[in-house]
Amino acid sequence: MTLDDPRGAAQTVTIGAMNPGTQQPTAPPGMPAPTGGGPRSRSPLATAIVVGALGVLTAVAWVTGGLRAQPTAPDQVRPGAAVDQGRFSVQVIGAWTGAAKVRYETKNVPVLIVRMRVTNTGKDTVAMAGSTFGFAAGVLLGPAPYRPPDDVRNDPARGAADSLQPRLTRAVDVMWKLAGPPPRRAVVALRQWTYRLQFDGGAYYWSTGKDATTVAEVTVPVRQGAAG
Image (cartoon, rainbow, N blue to C red; front, top):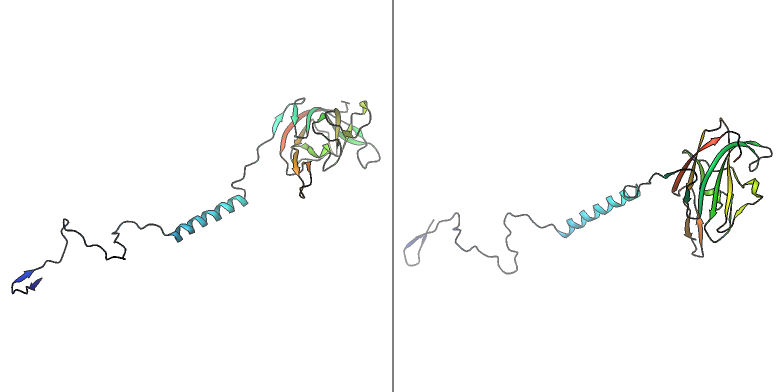
């Protein structure tokens, strides 16, 4: 392109690619400098959207159990070995079939009897029976689905008793009614007892239940029609 010089001479100006050695024009004050064709930084709004989406996915995974610890299989314990349930120390000694009066029955019925040696390791006296706070609440007959006991009693040869005193070991018979052929083996599941604070914060108490962890399973042979 040709321009007229004020002095009368013609000058030629070439419009096209700039000389790399020539200083590039800078942006006027107050205007952002050109960034060229490079990648742009992520805006705060986009970052917030990404973080929020990750938070929602994490919450969904937690609710559906994706981030929860998966339950582990209970320990398989041999008969006679001590099992710590938290509130009790228990040894499953033996099992046999027989006939006995269980709770709410007026005559003898076929039963499976499992004898255990139980020590109350706490500081308070605990009932043997009871589906909530008694010792029997933490004992089930397997395999799954587990069955709660129909009754529990002190070893008849050692007198009548219905409770477990602190630090006192007793021989306890836990019983299940039989509706079919007697089993050749019994699987005894022992649940964990947990020391909890009451909802009103007044005191602590021991509890177990269907959501409690099964700490051990003991498989014991069943003697047919024999006493322990």
